[in-house]
Each structure stands twice: as C-alpha cells, then as structure tokens.
Length: 365
Image (cartoon, rainbow, N blue to C red):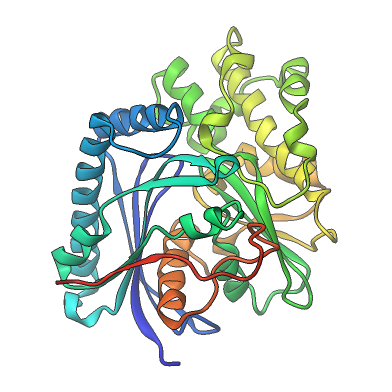
C-alpha cells in the first residue's frame, strides 16, 4: 500500500490546546514526521471546555446540552484554524493532503457504560478543506466491549521498531498511559492513572498558574506520605489491564489544606507511584521507558519516575522524536490505517474482542 500525507489533530486531557502534526506514512512501517504546530487555547475557552467535560460526565449518555453544543462548534472552528496554520507552515496546499485524523476532545469517557464521547464536527472540518476526515476513533471499540483507550500503542510500535525490547513508551498528558512492546512486537497497554491533570488543576486553583513549569514548585515541597498512601489505596491501580480512566475520576480533595508546594510534590509523586504500580501488571520488566507528552518537561516528575520504577526514564526526544507531536502524529497514522482497513485497537491494548479498525469517515462535499 502506498504512503499518504496525513494530518493528525489532538486536543488532549490537559486541555491546553490543539496539537497538529503532518506525517507521511503507509500506516504500517513507514513514518516520516514533516511538520508540527501547537495552538494554545485562550483561557476563556479552557474554562468553557472544562465545564463541558463536567456536564458530560454527569449525563447518563451523550445527547444535546446547550453548553456542550456551543463548545463543540467553537472547538471545531479552532481545529479549522489549527489545520490552516499547519498547512501554512508546511507550504502545502490542502488538496495535497490525503486525510485528516481528527480526535476531537473527550468530554466524557464511560467504557463501563459502553460509551465514550469525543466532541467535534468531522463533517464541517472535511468541508472546510476538501480533505477526507477520519473522526470518532474510539466509539466502535467501546461499543464492542473495549476500553477505547489507549489508541496510541499501534503508533508507538511503529516508532519503536529499532529499539531493544521489551521496551515501554509512557505518554504523559492529563492522564498517563503506558505501551509495552515485547520482543515479538506484542502490545500491552493501559492507563496507569493521572499524569499532569491533577497537578495542573492544583496549580490553577491554588497558585493562579497554568501548570508547574519544570516541576519547580513540586521540587520545593515535601511529599505528604500519608496523603499519598491514601490516594494510592484504590483498587483501580491493582486491576488488570485493559483499563482506562477519565480525567475527572480523581479529584484534589485529598491534598486540600496542604501548601502549594507540598500539594504539588504529593500530586507529582502520585503520578510517579501510579506508573510504578502499573509496571507490575506488565508481562515483563521493560529495559527502558521513553516518555512522550507534555509531562516529560517536568523535571521533578521525570526524576520521581526513575526513582519509583528503578528503570532508566528518558524523553522520546533523545531518540529524535518530537515528544510534543507524537500523539497528534498517532492520529494521522491511525487515519491512514482506517482508510487501508487496518486495525487500530487490539485485545492487548483496549480489551477489544479482536483487532479492530475504528473511526468514522467524513468525505468532503
């Protein structure tokens, strides 16, 4: 099968903006990163998006809700802008691009109820550029009994084809997920817990800051071991994979009353210890852990991860990856696989009953 030019779009659980990546891929072994653009959300939209997520989590099933509908429309317009900016950076015309992988934004993830909800208008995005769009990539997996997450492992495997195995790829967005790649290429993947989501919430609520830049606030604090132990006393961490969570599944309640620095330190340790617990669920101990996502910029978190796991933890950038663009690139890669009829989720990654392709194709009119 021939290679395609594909754009991938990701609005992740960190709710900080849109990542847009352009790659050339055949959906299998060929992957070439060509361009990347990160477009931050303005504060007003971030607040609206967070409220939409809270409302969606309170609903019994996806349906019409005025705020969510308004946020969906604005989110789609922002994605159109992100694609236009990416095309401008690349020097390409829209007609040269074969497909867009459009994740949208997850406002609620309820695999226990057989549904997951990613907002964003794929048809409108396709119409804006005359490019075929693949969207709604998680729903088919969840409807079949899978977790619908994580979906990136199939792309992680393509990126890691030259690495010594077994190896683990850790994605640190708002939520953390890990991909284990065995010597035979077998995949095991699952969410390990929170990544930056709670830390960001804490900094915004208590420090009037968007996030703990570099982990400097956490580095100045002390981990409250009693609070940490209470947070880790959750049967979810010991549940076998496949498993996934929503960002709203954990709250700041346990750390309320701590100082800004001690709360940041405790929440950062919570992420690191959650990953360490997740390693116990893997079939083998990985030789190394390579990290993608915004959390890799948090030096305190990276240090705590290495201490908690006892394994060398490195940024994927050390391998020549752009750790900020990996997730967006993955959705471009999955869009090409969808067009080729190749699976994007597997029993070992989401718990799907069989390897499944996924995604709805929106053809431009």
